[in-house]
Length: 131
Image 1 (cartoon, rainbow, N blue to C red):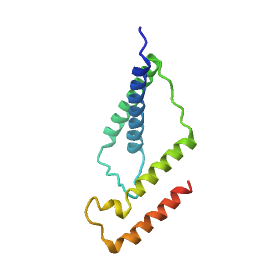
Image 2: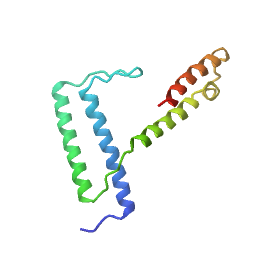
Image 3: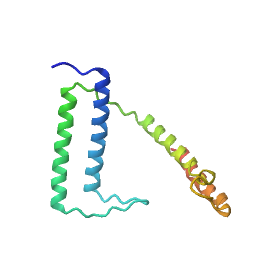
Image 4: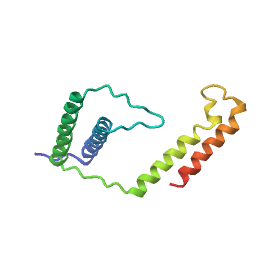
């Protein structure tokens, strides 16, 4: 069988990587009580449906494994420090873009809330900086 070009391998590898992440996220959501501060899970799927979905997710993972082997895709290495630093950087960017002066793009931000609001975000930014 002819081998995929490096560009085609990268495209397929990226797709399968994201698929695998989505599969893991779905499995985690179905098997854990993962209510967050900003998100509550509504458990509306029956146990029988969850079992069926989880079995199918295992089949999807097996197919991803098969395709990765068939097309000789390299396994990515996740360096923890790079991962944490990338997330810190993204969190910093999102918080800065949420400061009151930036929120004026969504309508005039209440001037009397600006100072306290920005100070609250600064507290979170300082915590993110400690990661």
